[in-house]
Length: 134
Image (cartoon, rainbow, N blue to C red; front, side, top):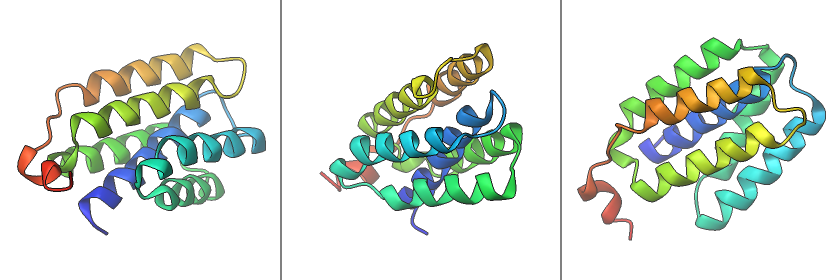
């Protein structure tokens, strides 16, 4: 996979972790996640299918919240040179929507969302990589 695809793979893992933070991932949560990612990422010409596919695989394999989150952040850090400020803002926006997609929003979901924001904040992409796409 390309670095950009790896970032989208990772965002699927983070979304799964947030959705799973309150227990099992409900069918409605998966559908809402699908719709959120499609609306926020596909229209911006990003690799929509990768995020959705990883979410489905992790749900099937019952990946733990912590394993999903840790694996995703490792991928994001590894591929952060392709993380433009716009893509980072989009990822945060998607995660906020995923956290709020299925009521009630639990404290565990909000804590994981805040952890994600804190962990992604210091990551700065390399302008040479992402500006060449513009």
